[in-house]
Length: 122
Image (cartoon, rainbow, N blue to C red; front, side, top):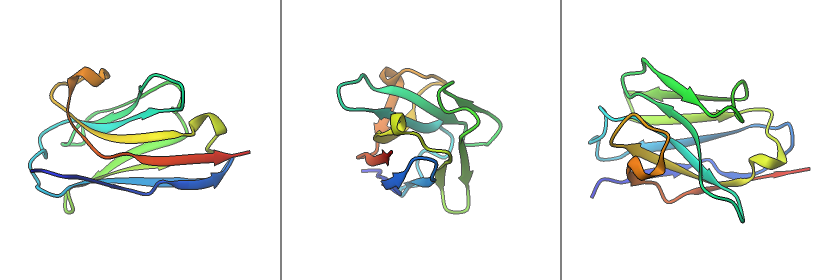
């Protein structure tokens, strides 16, 4: 079926940057909200950021405001998460998500990416 292809995870020092990508290879969800959740070891999955595919609305968790920036490229049907000033507490598996509604609840996610591990060392 439709695939969300994630890339960009890795290991970085505190204060460094990474960029995550999530591509809708089937070009099926171009009218849906997309974004990321993350789940750290021993923690519940938490909302990170959301963007309307039209680009007219973004919403960030307080924990990442001012450090993370979500954007999209409609030509490639790809959403990007630029993560700057990374902190050890950002360490988690990051899951790209397609929402069925405007939401921050993972119960409202239609499809998930496989996840990308981000590790921030101190």
